[in-house]
Length: 112
Length: 113
Image (cartoon, rainbow over the protein chains, first blue to last red):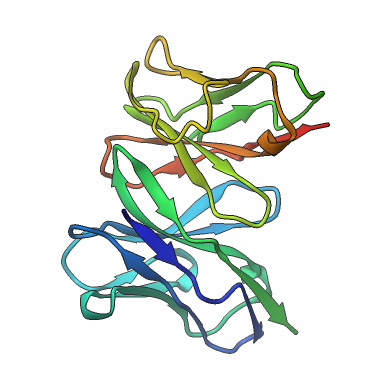
């Protein structure tokens, strides 16, 4: 069965500092991987996706993620966070007829 | 362009009542998914439609949950005899094809009292 682990429930980062959110997955085949962001009371917005090819993918809002097959990881990074980045971040795997499997999310807090 | 819309945005139901949650996907999107998101958790898959065909309903938690998409566009998730454990945000997502990124609606927050 596929699964996603986001080991950090909460992360606090100072505005302007760099950010890395961790994601590890378990999937039987070549995974489709996604990062979504959810602001309070909002739906999920797709930040970026990995299907194949270049293992470093660029997304919206200055985010990027790197697929590392040997580590079963798909960590999300941003070089300099803004206060507006405070939100809940979800890593997900899948994309077939059985839908996406999400991690439990990482709550990002931005300190001024 | 218009995204995925859901209605109502909030629903309060007394235990035992039936509820119906509506999803309007992005026009032309073949695939439609329903997810349940409990407080503090990630979304969990409920069911999947390809056009009007419900191809996977393995995530529906009980036979009180029923989903339909009769004309391959709008979908309704119905919960009969609601229980307190049904309280959650119900998210709908659509996709142009199955194995592509999904676009999510804002969700319906259901509170069962």
